[in-house]
Length: 114
Length: 113
Image (cartoon, rainbow over all chains, first blue to last red; front, side):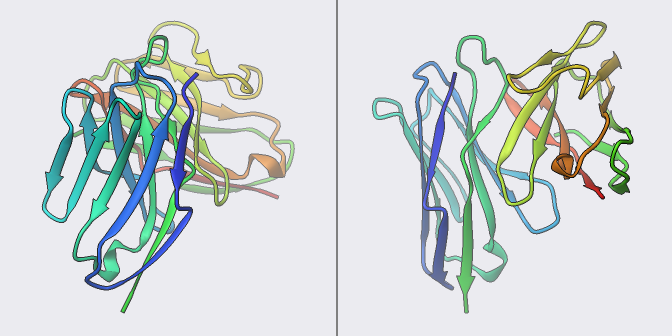
């Protein structure tokens, strides 16, 4: 089955700096890669996703890049703000037999410091 | 997106008892899933809730422990049976909309004492 690795597990940045979280996946047939943000005591919220026919997608301060050859994808947050502090999860799905079942990374605790 | 409601949102349960969690979606969806998130951990898929048939369970999860119902395309239940403290987790239902896009319900925070 699919295996997703995520790094780093914790990340501290100064407000206004950029943050990058990286994930690798094992199943070359996976074709959907969402990112979720989870604030303390809340459910995971979809913040951006990318499909395998696209190399990059951007939504305001958030961008995701996908390298299918290397089987890795990354989340980029620019001009970080304190409200960006949360746990971020990457995930992958779409391989044969996997369908829409998501395999998650282990999460990254992002802390944006003033 | 879809509005996905879960009940209960939070509960404290006694060891050995069972609890049923409900998931209601505001539109018909083909695919529904149940995930578990243990404290400080990532999300793990429990099963796919199949409408009109038995759920499909992932490795490590069995029907006797986590029976699931899916009577129609907008509703599903997950029961956590014979609970132990190790079952203390967040249980989340999720649905697929617009192709692969997957959204989560509000979550049910379960503490077993």
